[in-house]
Image (cartoon, rainbow, N blue to C red; front, top):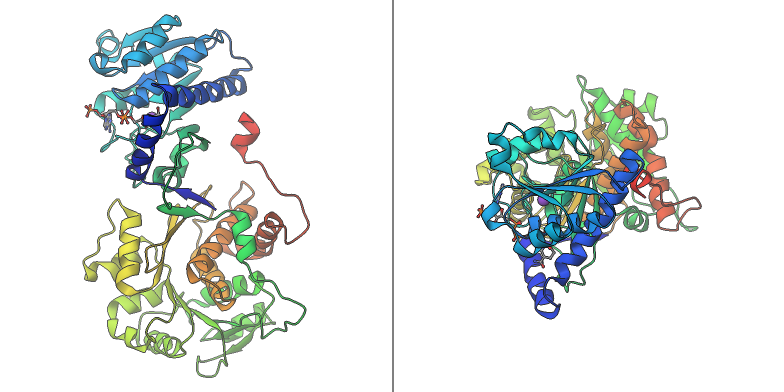
Length: 504
Ligand SMILES: NC(=O)C1=CN([C@@H]2O[C@H](COP(=O)(O)OP(=O)(O)OC[C@H]3O[C@@H](n4cnc5c(N)ncnc54)[C@H](OP(=O)(O)O)[C@@H]3O)[C@@H](O)[C@H]2O)[C@@H](O)CC1
Ligand SMILES: [K+]
C-alpha cells in the first residue's frame, strides 16, 4: 500500500521542511535525482551520456528551477543542454545562473518561434519538462502546448507532466505525455489518476512529515494478505458462499462470466440464480444453479446486475437480493434499476454493505438525480456518491476510484487498456461478490477485486488482444501473484515492468 497526498497537503509539509533545510537544498536534491534519471534515460535511448543533447522546457516557477538545476548537473557529465524559457523575465534566478555557470545554452521560447525554430526540440535526445508543477491550473498555455506538440524524443517530466491537473489528474490532449516522471516528497493524485501520462513514476524522498494520505493504492502484497484462503477446518460452505444473480435469456454470457470469475477466484461454493441456469451449469458444473433468488439457498454475499435487464423481472430480482440482507455488489442493469426505481433501496437493511460498480454512464444515471456531476474531479464525485448513498462506490475507468461512505478512498491504476473488452465488467462483478462473501472490510474487498481484475487482464493479454473469457481463466494466476507477493504462496516476486527493465 502506498499513499497519495493532495497539493495542499504536500505544500504544508514542504513549508515545514523548507524552513529547516539550508536555502535551495531541497531543490538541489530534487534536481540531482532528475539529472541521474535523465542520464539513465539517455543511456537507454542512445547508448551513452556525454555529448548527447538535452532540451529543458522551463516555466516561470520552481518546477522550471528544478529543470535548470538538473541541466547544470547534466553539464558535469558533458551533456549539451539547452534551456527554452517560456517566461524569461520570471525564470528561477538561482537555477538559471547555475545552468549558465555550467555552460548551458539558454534561449527564449518566443524568439525561437519568431525565428521559425521551434524544431529545436526535435533534435533533442531527451526533453525535460519543467514547464509547470504543483501550481498548474488548467490546460497547458498555447505557447507551451505548441512546443510540447513538437517533441519526438523521450520525455522526463519534473514532478508531474505539465498540463495534467495535480489533484484531479484531468488532462487535455495537449498535456505532456512523459516516459518517466520524477516526483518529490510524495505521490500526488495525478500520478495515479493520470498514470498513462506519467509513465514510470520515481519518488524522491525529501523527508517530509506527511499527514494521513488522501488516497491509497493497494499493492500485490496488500491484496495477497486480504484474500481469504481455505484453512484446515474449512469446507466448501465455510469460506464464504458467493451468489450471482445476473444474465438473462438475451444475455446469458454475463451470467457465465460473473459466475466464472467467482469460481476461479475462490475455492468456496458459488450459487447462481437466474434465467441462464442451463448455460451456467453447462460451463461451470461446480456451481449450484437455480432459477430464482428465493430457491438459491444461503450465501454470504450477492453479486447482482450484469445482463439482468431493466424491466419488472430484473427489478424483482434486485429486490429479492437486497431482501436477503447480505453484502451485495450491484453492477450494470442493477445500477440502472436503482437509479430508475429509488424505492428499491427500501429493500436494503440499513447499513448493510452495498458496493456499486458503475462505469461513467451508470454513474451519471444514479448520481445526477442526487445533484452529483461526474466532472473532471472523479475522486470528489465518487466520494460524494458513496457518502450520499451510504455505499462503497467503485467508479471504473483507466484509474478505478473506490470510495467508502466515510471517505476512505483507494485508487487502482490500470497499466494497460486490454480490459476494455466486452464482458470485462461482468468478470469484475463476480470478483467483488467473491471478495465480499469472504468477509473483511468491504472497501478493501472491492479494492482487492479491482486489483485482481487488472492483473488478470494483463496476464490474459500478455501484450496482445484478449477476451473476458480469457480474463476469467487468468484469475487464479492473478490471485497467485498476489499471494506470492504476500509470502502466502511459493514463487518469485518482484516482476519488473518495461520501464524498470529499460532504465534500471
Ligand atoms: N516547495 C518545495 O519544497 C519544492 C518544490 N519543488 C518544485 O516546485 C514546484 C512548484 O513550484 P511553484 O509553486 O513555484 O510553481 P510551478 O508549478 O513551477 O508553476 C509555475 C507557474 O506556471 C504558471 N502556470 C500555471 N498553470 C500553467 C499551465 N497550465 N500552463 C503553463 N503555465 C502554467 C503559473 O504562473 P503564471 O504564468 O500564472 O504567473 C505558475 O505560477 C513543484 O512542482 C516542484 O517541481 C521541488 O524543487 C522540491 C522542493
Ligand atoms: K512538469
